Image 1 (tube, protein in one colour):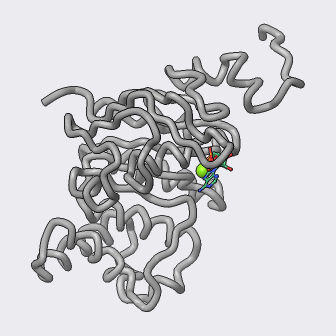
Image 2: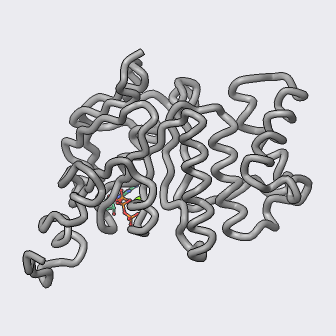
Length: 245
Ligand SMILES: Nc1ncnc2c1ncn2[C@@H]1O[C@H](COP(=O)(O)OP(=O)(O)OP(=O)(O)O)[C@@H](O)[C@H]1O
Ligand SMILES: [Mg+2]
């Protein structure tokens, strides 16, 4: 089994006149948590969408576990072991929390009893068992985020892509989410996470990459990357002055 789980090589995507992602390459090691940083509009979600099969890259190649998944549709990429959460979480309305978690299990099984068992395991794992029979639409924003994570995990992925997991969460909830993602990794899932909240990224990532204007700008240990002058400039603009401090 190779150490590399995801390999992205030179992918690009253009929307009309906008080059949203340009010649992006990076690897993800098995068991790693990689943070994807970058200012608004840097191309992070577009990169995710290409990896998860929501649209095909114009250029480049993507491999998951040695399998070429370039341009494959989301269901096929999901079968190959990739799951994702979205920037905005929308549970299936009119369905209970448990049923929301059962849907994803159907990727791997047709057996309802097995599906229920898996959903119940996830309810425990996410600390949502007390909300199992509630209509998922009535959940709070943070509970929805957890259901969103659970739905992704219900497909039993080897790679989990998460887009802005603590947006709108209280600091306490953000901390809970960080602990939860660590637990997910401890279960053997590799994680690629987009997040603007520095504290979350710093506390969670083994390594970070930074995108700016569609391109890769930095790749390294979190503490090193956030000190790089070009990264600070990308975030804070030309007003940033490197004092060497
Ligand atoms: N479907 C689309 N059609 C046209 N332009 C798009 C589309 N999706 C993204 N873009 C453009 O591509 C660029 C990158 O957007 P993207 O959403 O990938 O950035 P992001 O890094 O995820 O930003 P944010 O931090 O705000 O979520 C932006 O200029 C955006 O306006
Ligand atoms: Mg985005």
